[in-house]
Image (cartoon, rainbow, N blue to C red; front, side):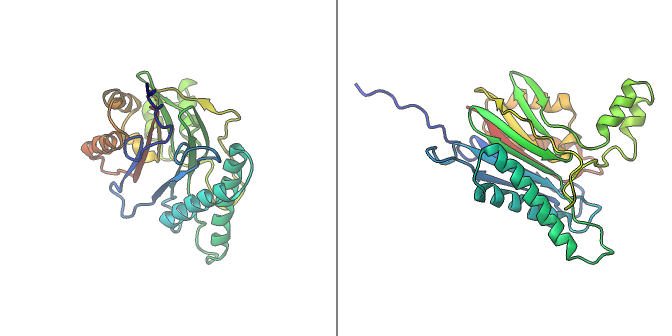
Length: 266
């Protein structure tokens, strides 16, 4: 009697991983993302995914160009360098930052430097590794709960700490003009803050990994969590569509560019 074959560990595009973008109320789309096959020797193609999201700094020259250049430099460097996955993630980040720096050096001295945030997630069906600089969030939805995994390198955490200490009100923090100012980004200079956990995070069936740009924060944490609770039994593409649909419905007058990448762990 023929034994049933085990399901393929490979991820299926749109079913298991997908991404969508929304320009929002901005003139240009300054986010850029890429999925790449990160399978090692001996693994099935697409058994391991690399998802990279860059959010170009709008106040700087060529934000859309910066995110495009940095994301592509990251993916290329990750594939070209030997070594452990962890080493390749860090090397790819440094390469992306150096690439931004080299291009900035060729620009007129009066122009502000090009810049972008960077979030890279390396995902298999059993574990997740990441490296990030800036405020682009990495979420894990598990068993009905939504958790942000990576650090926020904007001033938001500092303002929230001041609220806890009684130094300002929640309303003052929410409307603070420097709330979204970044403490760290890829500018071609030494990066002040890098979120790069030492150990991979174990994943389990039913988990949903989301890598996004900060435009997703138009949805508050509870709203995003509830949306994922309703959508956890559908496909990755439908989850990404639903998130952007919810953001569009809010119709925020200053809506930022939004990129949402989704990976479902079956």
